[in-house]
Image (cartoon, rainbow, N blue to C red):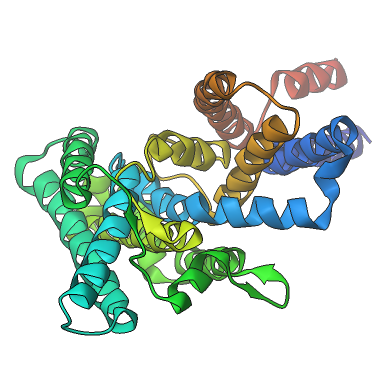
Length: 357
């Protein structure tokens, strides 16, 4: 009889623990829902279809980079150069496109394609350099990418001469930033398609599992036959490619390019990834969580605009959000690990002691 009672209590406790873990795993989704409800009450115009599509379009610019950043952080690295790569990509595309057209070498329609190709090549070389420096000199990726952040911003400023490059793109180029398909902004469609690609990569492929293994324990991964070097090359190049995509859509939206595009984006992007549950220590994180994190920060930014929050105060709020996101993420990771790892909790011990008396 006592055994039946113990088994019954075990089932109840297990069920309660399962519910608790379910809440912990989906806490960011719950908070996003609460945030949407709160903002909708404070600003009724928030739920208008035009505003929702605007949130998706703006979120796409940073969101595609956030997916790449998620891989980088899961692998145990960081990339602070993403904002400057956004600027450099747009500037290179505009400079080459306009330069080739003005020189009479080719029409601007083809020149834009050459500019995009050049920006893509530079991004791949940058990612390769980051991985090489990390492997060759064992330098922290924080230092490597902090250096290239400044180098690329400076190079972008030199190329554009410190002024926006206007009238540099053909008509079709503008569609990449402001076009619509069935009423949905093209950047929002790209945002969803890129999400599906990264989700499949991390959830269904061996490469995705290798990224998690390297981030969890690089030495153990190496001993198990995983090439840490190749894995780092992939994630570092992938996030840089996402910067090119964002830079192209961003410059296409305004049909110009300048070195100030993307400035400060790195902190917002990292905040979105961390809010989505990715651990800064590596080895933990999901693309789904990053999607929710991007939407979360996008809703907050949009809400501050609708509520006429001072621009400088928005910087304060975004900075505080990043700090608390990292702190909360660390706390929840420890909590979740403890919840999963400890089969017997203090409550369970007390109940069993009472039954044994």
